Length: 289
Image (tube, rainbow, N blue to C red; front, top):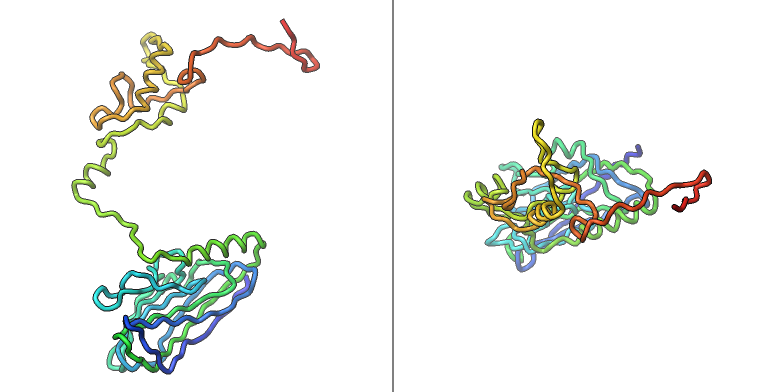
C-alpha cells in the first residue's frame, strides 16, 4: 500500500457569472502514471465567506465534469453538474455559501461523511479534477472564493493493458448525457397487475423450461403413458406460442413445471433410427461388419 496525500485549494479574488448565472471552475491535479488509484478519503473546507449568498456544487472526477442541460433550479439555473450517482462522479457536494458569519454553511455530500472517510472508489486516469460550480444571478461578480480540499489516494501498479482499458472506460464515462431519464412512472394498477405477479399478463412460455430434464407423465402407482413424437412436438410448439394470461400454458395437459430434453429430430425433422454401434480393434481402428 502506497498512500499519497493531496492538499490543495481553489482561491479566486473574483468570478463573473455568465448570462444564466453560472460560473464553472476546474482544477487539475496530476497523479502517478500507470497506476490504479484508490480514492480512500476526502475532506473539504470552505475557508471564507463570499461577497453574497450563493449556491455551489463540487465534483471530484477523473475528467472535467461537463455541465448538463438539467437544471439546478428550474426557474433560475437551467444547467448543473451530472448527478452524484453517475459513474464519472467519485465525490459530490452541494453547498449554500453565506456572505456573513451569522449563518452556518449548509453542506450535503455524496458519499456521506461516514463512507467518504473510508472510500473504495478507484480509477486509472493519471489525473484528477476538482470541479466547482457557482450559481448566482446573471452577470453577477462574486469575490472572495476560497475552497480547500484533501484527498488520500492509494496507488497500486497495474499492467499496461489494465491501465489502458480502465482509462478508456473512464474517458467514455466522462462523456455524460446532457439529459438523463432512467426512471419509469407507474400507476398503482400497473404495479399490482404487471409486477405482482407477472404471469397474469401472459406471454411466451420460456423455452428453457423444456430444456433440462426429460419429464414423464407417470405417477408412482400408474403405468407409464405412451408419448409419441407428434405429442412431444405439439408440446414444444405450445411453448413457443403467445398465450393469454388465463391460459399461459396452452391447451395441452402439461403442468407449468414440465421440463424435457429436446433431442435432435423432435423439432427439426423425423427421428432417424439409431446408427449401428461401432466396434474398435485393439489398435483403435474401427472394425467393419
